[in-house]
Image 1 (spheres, rainbow, N blue to C red):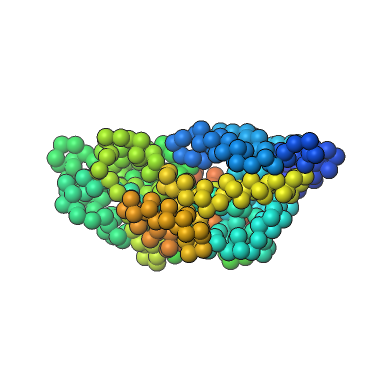
Image 2 (image 1 turned 30 degrees about the vertical axis):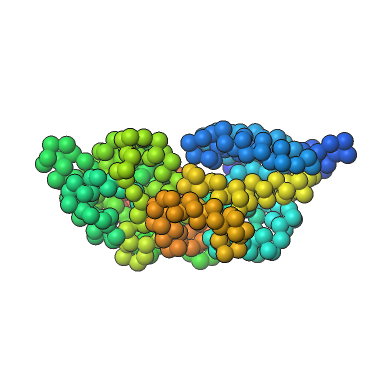
Length: 437
């Protein structure tokens, strides 16, 4: 855990929020003005993948669209943006609206720091339009996040490489994935240019991604992160051992190389297949001629219990201490509207609304984007396999779990630690954090 996170963890968010509420009550925060538009402070990381300026463009569009609410954007960096938001809230100087991972953070929810959507002008008719996965933003019977888009782990594969080595379709099961990847690795080496048939995202230069990868494979093995009451970590189980033994076999059998970049290797043609959130498509497309017409997306190969995968994406939330909940809600309903979420599909973000419940013009837009790119069929198939359960579990002891998994999944998979020990360490570390909630 980074030093800033340790300092923030030492400070109760409930106490920090009390300070923020006090500051707002005494004149801080945003308030309506009789002399001009209401000001809403919005803090966000650049969530439009590949085009950092897009968030500012959207805010400018909103400001130009009406005269009652003015949004002031503070654009943060991904490396420390979440910590800066927490720090600002602790100081009583936080934003009215900010970007948060789908699933939300338990500290914010338990402290009362977030305003439920019904206090922001959302009606039941508004929230009924969301896909069932939007329950990832629910807590104690209330919805606190307005989803911008969803992510799900899918499999990306090089069609040219699979065809070169005799495979006309992507693998559909764990057994097929292992045999296909092994054949590509072996045959390519024999041909004089080794191509790794598979790389687990996170066992490379993007360590944090091992969390979504691991949780997908644990889910496919029938495992869970916690007990149903969220009080016990449940990774050191038969399902956990099945998932980690399977992942480990790719490195023990030298099918996959630890450390090789899944994304960069995929673009260069040195990796044939890898799993990650479908929004990584924007990064693949940036490879230009190196990948044009040579790749596709498939649902995750199904494990022994299911074909589920990790769910991600982002939502908007608002501070319950804001003096301008009406203005905050007006902006959120615009930025997280079906119209804008249809635009986010341009970087392959998943539309979070039920198409049967949105305006026909929006449905036509979404249908047109899906028709223009067959990869959406695989993405939506994967979407249909997933439930909110895993992300709701992940909300509890989130930081402790993600830190523990990064260290111990990698150690267990690459053989630095026995599988049982790696899983036991995760449960012990996460269990301590769960016990403090």
